[in-house]
Amino acid sequence: MLRSRQGLLLVEAVLSAVLIGVGLIFISRGLGGQLQALARVTEQDRLIALANSKLAELEGAMAFGHAPLSGQGSFGAPDEAYRWAVRAVPRQEEEGEPPACEVTLSVSREGASTVSMTAVWPAEWIPPAWF
Image (cartoon, rainbow, N blue to C red):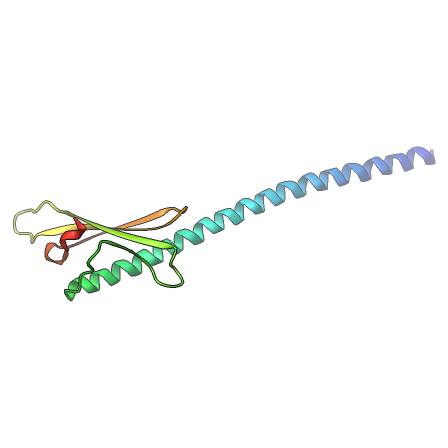
């Protein structure tokens, strides 16, 4: 009777080790997926923050007549890997409205996603290079 009881304990120990190992594999895969998702969200947040700041910077420059010569560029340190581009499309004017353009700013990083933001600005703010 003692022998069968010892054998059963060994089988139980091996089965427990296998179950714990399988569980740890699933947990590590889940954590790996969570880390990848966190990295994507962090990158998206960075793109949105850069787009917001560049759009505000361009809007301020346009309001004071300091238009950039080009409709594209890159950011300074520490964001040299990010690029921005802006283009304007004239809006169809309705009666009584001043001429306006839809300005779309896109911010991207090589190998990453792109964020685009659109604003409506007076047509006189828009340099010809942006069309």
